[in-house]
Image 1 (cartoon, rainbow, N blue to C red):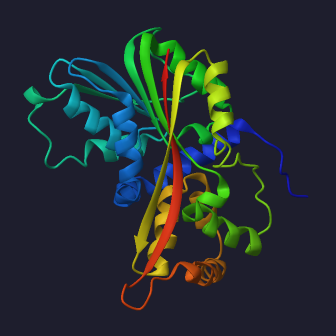
Image 2: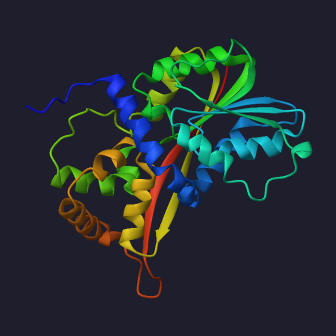
Length: 286
């Protein structure tokens, strides 16, 4: 019998394995998230000399941007449960400013629900497209609130409602049609797509002065296979599970995705596919 029960430990282990697997590729899809990342950084209101924690930092896209914004008097902690993501972060800065011109950077392998940082030690927490991945997001938010100094700012992003994010649900729909339910139940990546739920969760964690911003954007793909690869590069634990499938099944999935994506094909004068997505940006004060 398939076990579809929710097991937080198994979920975290799968996510860690998945993101370790895709660590060397994850930054390649950074362009897809440019609008979301920029809006999150704007919401964070970074200033020289601040200390910043970037949760689920991945290859350090937000952490490195913060490092440059904070200047040499600042400090950045890049934290991720997947240690290979942090290795990738260390190795993806060929054009970084000299050390004297940027904040100190610390790479920390850690579980976002159980941070090793002391109370009230950072001025900003960044969490890009991460909250929905946590088995217990309320614990993650409580930890974010705990490490922030009074008056410190949390800036995070989450995916919008399912119907507003074909960038994700096109692939998910194909997987659901061709494969049985996963053995390990997974929280929905759209669990905070209703801004009311996001606001309520932030309030329950003790945050105030909450402001939400909707970001709508489009992602261009020259070929359907590029879309599928981009999905895998974002999928973490799901990518790990899909990698274990027989090659014939993976081929069927690629074919199904190409068919599903056809409704987003550009007109004849514009090659490829234009796939929409929506995210929400939250700014909140501890």
